[in-house]
Length: 409
Image 1 (cartoon, rainbow, N blue to C red):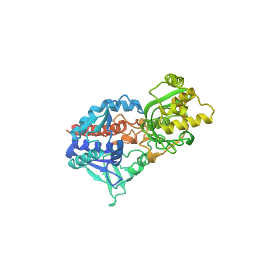
Image 2: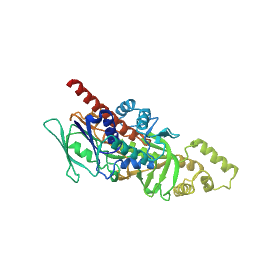
Image 3: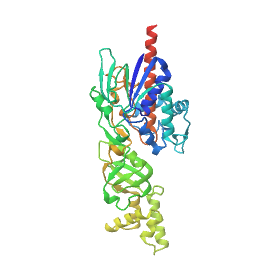
Image 4: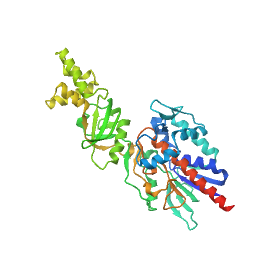
């Protein structure tokens, strides 16, 4: 009987395991190894526990290594994903931004259904089991050594590496997959945190801790705008967070140049129009103070911060107020690291794999999900890619096994 070992029980590894058993049934044995004490830990935390699975705009949104990702998404679309999950019993829905969620808005629903499907299809799941070494045998099979309490050693015909990246290591993905593959001479591109909060100079955010403000966030390389997105910015004691900031962080991590961050704190009104409105108010009521003007369209802490800064610079006028609100520049000094990041920038070089995710240097060995040098912005793109890669690898192994059966006939 053909034996497959899947290393890592995130969405990619789980879907690969389920789909393999669905297709090949008793002709294949699938063993799923998970280093943590339960499967799907990172999935449980996704989307603040709501589990943003995909997006109807999955082909339109920014994703790094876009050509490879587009190939994957064209093979396995948002509709394909929803149908696959429905076949497993999961009902889904889309929000106003076309993001796909379980209808329960609970990641626990997804993980519980995955557990039930793994059990139904007789996938052997070993938790608290980390792979420490992989060896290729003379018979073109693989021997896998683990930390399992019973000193579990496995022989297999296929290996699927689905260990995830380095982000949020407390949930299981601490980068061990990269280390394993590096020993097999697989090229790993530089690793950096993505979808993470940014640490900035404190003088720009002093007194704003806890404030949430709708803003347009832009990144500039010199005078060239390289990123722009509207969203809620969360101010912290030493930095900025929120989805739009996390998206910006991934662009920063990929950039070869130093980027400048600008906040437009009032994106609904153009600067010229804001100038006119402030001038009109000042003309109609000459007694109105600059503070009264500012708190009419800004939260009080933010209004006070900007007014104080402009006063210190001896630049406090209606025009400078409008300009500072529309062009609030912040110096980036770093990010909150892998512990706080949602995705890993970098990974297995795409040149190392085929379109079917097979490693070119190692026959019958695959790398899928976040382990690869593919990452998207917030919105379900990374989970969609992980699930898609798991399904596509299962299809690839199925085709190989069916091809072997045809030859034997």
